[in-house]
Length: 419
Image 1 (cartoon, rainbow, N blue to C red):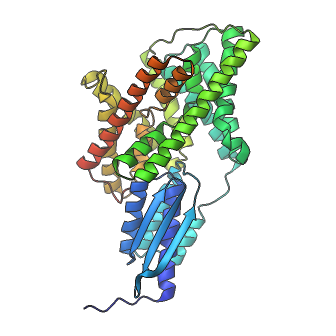
Image 2: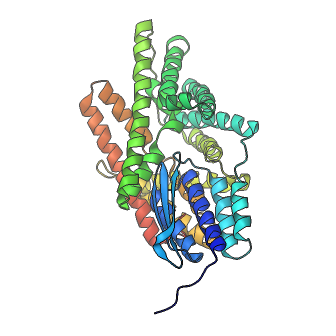
């Protein structure tokens, strides 16, 4: 029998502290359970640790075996965490710190300090830019959905109001709990006021565009991805969280419409039309910039993130319209785009030794079907159950096609360290 490898206790604790910090940060920056667990286990193995990890959207358990006495005498960390949100700049910085530690360029203690130094207070300029990006993304999405000029301007202004609410809620826990319902209520009232007293606009289209950043489309996609990877607890919990957000958005919208009826307003509807090419391209450029800000990418990565948004949209149009993969029962455009984005993001990660999430996350943001789920629940709340069910089937089809595309893309080009 081989003798156990001896490791000084201080070195053992330093390694477990570093791996625990890494896991906490990957969780905080929106990494899905299967990617997080695989990445952390890989780093732990490189550091000579026997680590078992269990992750869910609101916490983690990490168990480290003692290098001499075995699993029964190791260290177990139970960590309660808030659900993560995308922060591409800090994810890339965390990845680079980990690379430097594994390559021996940084000591474990220095790497740990470098990770903790990432927690800088958010500056006023960043908060103002985030508010502006809510408005830009709302106006751009309204343009992509075919709203008229008055509708685009209305969506942009209401999106800005939503951004103010969202940024304010980050520091106010009680407001944060009701953010989606309040934002939907305010958006519905403002859209109805414009349509009644100013100019006709496509009301439902503008409501969806105004709330697009709060739609849990990416959360739904991540949930189905986790379920497909057999991370059942994490996937189910994340799916339930996404449904609660949709319910709050739906309640706010329905409550807003009831208030409109009580006030006796008569909103004038305009018909949404397919945008002409210059409008579509301009809206894509604006939305790409807005999502680069909202995903908190580093400035040097703005061109990459913006190009990824355009890539995902272009691949969807290519697969669905040019190649004719889309049909009533299969979202072929979403499947083709998901596969292409996944393969390209993984290739980028392997070639440049950086997180593939810099391409993968923004690349699918215009494909995720959060607005479809919102429309489905709205139809149900309005007692149009059959139309609601039909829209639900469209949601499921889009989710399955997108996640299947991501899985096939990962088969074509394996990911680098799972992030």
